[in-house]
Image: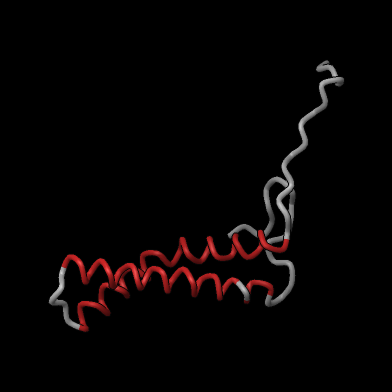
Length: 96
């Protein structure tokens, strides 16, 4: 993840421990991922074993880790730091 935003130069590391809250968002995403994997396994392979369930959930978690990590941090910072759209030049200013 970049240290600063390329557009507004907002620091993505505002203070030590700021992203501790992102852990809870990541937990929610992983819980949804685990439940989805379990339901899909139950639908498509009803006679699964505990080993199959654990392997399926582990693979899903490992493959989704980079996406969930970045997404949870982005959501957490968006809660506290508002997005400011770049202002467009006014119509009264003429291009020279």
